[in-house]
Image 1 (cartoon, rainbow, N blue to C red):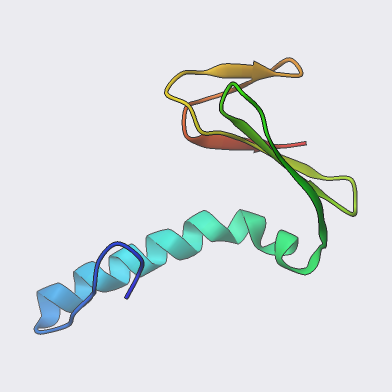
Image 2 (image 1 turned 180 degrees about the vertical axis):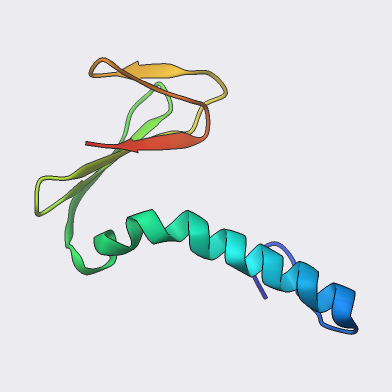
Length: 85
């Protein structure tokens, strides 16, 4: 189970498709793996759709949960994307 859907492997094609989805999730998570061991000190939701996660080492992850590009501290953040500062 991967959240929104169940993966099955009834045949070789199903297995290849499921593994492809799992690989995509791993690739998406890999750049953020270092955040797993750092304490999150704050999480703020702004009125414009920006979410800011702050970590004890000073790193901030800024996510744009809106349908339009938003500039944050001079950096554009595409819809449903994030930047790390």
